[in-house]
Image (cartoon, rainbow, N blue to C red; front, side, top):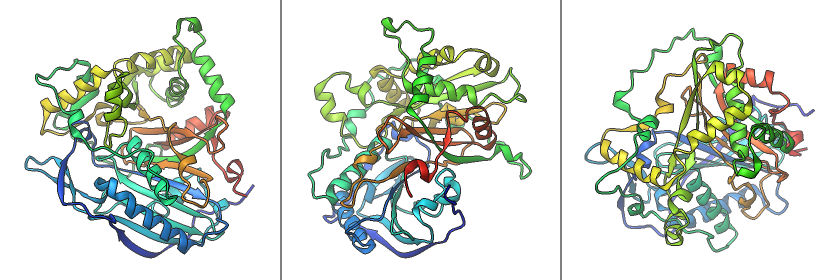
Length: 465
């Protein structure tokens, strides 16, 4: 086994602001009602590359910056800033401010990176901090000649679908390819209806921040298990298939009620985080799943597809379920998966997303957020959100020196509600890479009780040697 290195030094060699090669006229772009549901938080992404054969690091940086300047012409929002409008809501100022670009050198080899523990190796070292702009990028040369390309973006202006679209465009521009998709910022497709109309179920998913109880004071002597940490695991495809089979054990496959792999995985996760023998079984545990509304709003309409498929911004909803811990412990995986399927059913329709847009309009300018994020969370009454990253475009991130050998989202968002994102393995064999940001005690439970499913990520699995 390769020795991992966590205490390595990263030296910044250059800071620069990359601006669009063709500046646009300064303008303001309002956030959509769905954007307004996101609190201020940043999302990180990083890609690992082995030592390129015909590229020096200096040449790599030139390629990245040139392509970035060209890509920002189409993605002008990422070159702007967030400002407040007259009623205190955030809006986009497209002012050609540009993107902070950091060049750095890390005293570590690719095979020595402890990617299982991104808090020690990625956070604050290899993924940049976002400052004034909406996007920050860092290119880091490793001691072995390999490199990392990482970015951090504001979730208030882009969801994972939008970020993936930008990343693919950036790589295509570097390869002098035509953009496979040009982004659209047409907010009118998400305008509220007149009169507004929404189902009462939206009130169970979202809440005005003003109606939430004040946050509890944090105790410096809090239990170490109450600290949220990040870990990255891999799950082999056979285990994923086993979970799906268990989730469908009580379903008639001929009836079309087959539970998806994501539903099966989420059900297993929901059971695992409540396995502690010290947890009170009369308490509750919440689990939410992020739903992308694009396919729901398209709903088979080809004209709508042309408008919504390239849309840049947030088109998300987070339905969730709340169950007694006793039930989650005692019921089989198939029952839990069916409960997940049931609460997901409230949010996978066109009408739900149109209603959510109307609901936000009725509450403006008061800021609102997903109720699962607003609830008080502890190890005794946990909450976790699962977001599918199965469309994470690792294989498409070739800037000219080859595909990444690994890539992952990095989202230590700061709250106590957990966040879990399963992504495809770079091996392309059906395995999953799973980024998890959970309370330390929850991760210890998972590693103790599900070691046959969640395998700590290591360089051997990724073939870094």
